[in-house]
Length: 297
Image 1 (tube, one colour):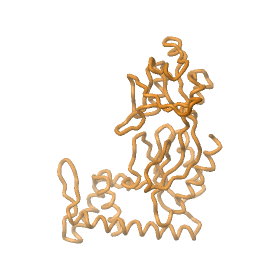
Image 2 (cartoon, rainbow, N blue to C red):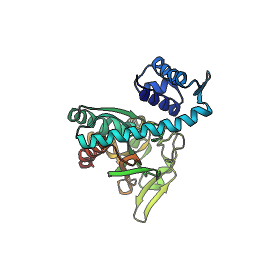
Image 3 (cartoon, rainbow, N blue to C red):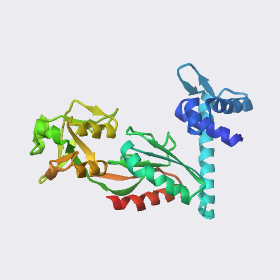
Image 4 (tube, rainbow, N blue to C red):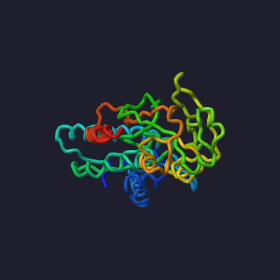
């Protein structure tokens, strides 16, 4: 493995806080990743990382070296992106992330045809309903539902994503159908929550404008598919993207409630880090996603 490849290992190990995680991110075994770190330390005769049984931290010189190594890697990546823009043959890895349900239904199907058309590109797709740090996790393209707040990232809107309140017929037969937003107070609302989650309320559309409803429920989860499953099983009312429950609505397994007071649609788009030169293959995948997904909304 080259010196530059060892630098990549060191940078990812520091960013992820673990030799195992850093190696896995680069598709290396922990033993190989560890050897790459040792090679760097032997090269300089200095310890770059302090290892304990519980965590790994860069030494003072390791932190300074990381800052320079990261800039070297970024410069190299930009140089490769420049070459790719002239050659017309995209090469290398694209790291994608998306929420679980959205990723499974909308993003994953985009990957095989894109790779078939661009055989020099590898896709690494990571799905999670938790917030991810796009910069620290070295994400190239993050698909996102909601209101982007980080000004350090570039936002490209794909579409407005309609949302609906849904429940199973059995739940409504047992608990009654809400006639207005205030009736939600008497229902078990199924909530998407995770650490630092902003979704402790639902914003519904009314003739007077958007209205924030402080809903409550006995079930919450950080997995949107679990939320839909609870609704299907008759446990309460869920606030879901329409694409996520369209088949269940068509089949009658779920029923829309408060159709005159639907939740505000969520913005659907993708986030990329600000860079002096955007990698052409990342822009190419974003164009592919916009072209394929915008008609679905």
